[in-house]
Image 1 (cartoon, rainbow, N blue to C red):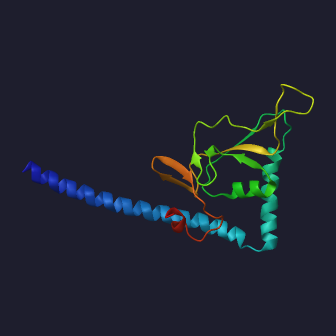
Image 2: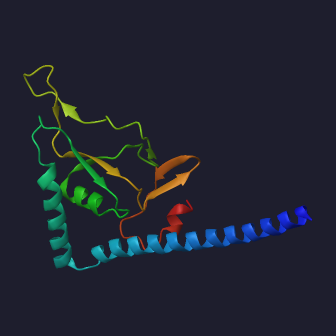
Image 3: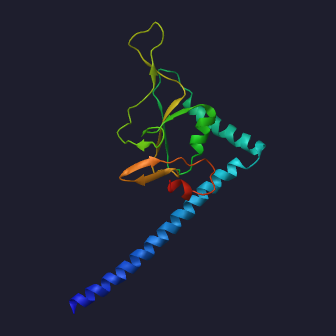
Length: 171
């Protein structure tokens, strides 16, 4: 009798677990679609609106990132899943150090926090300076273009403003 009760309970839990999985997948798909739609809206908003948005974004970023080579490095933290800051940094020529290693299919390395860019000024030995136009960048919750696979977090080649994420996850 207890075995029968256990089997009934197990079937109930399996069914509810499957329903929960489907609901979570649907919620994540809807969330990803809303982020991609926001990115696409920015790209298709017309030249005048784009320029205005990009100017605001670049001005905002450069107000923090413009530092002399002797000041501590700027650290940017965000909870956003979108890539608007990355786009603004690209437009402004600001290099973001985000702890991903690699070029083709970058892998996230949590241990890469102390990586930076320095140079030695001509005539001055032993006093490296920070390269200007560089910031440390941390996305606390992840990003629309991050994928977890084989126990690794990788950044996928998802174009800004893509219509759908699924084709890029299947490659």
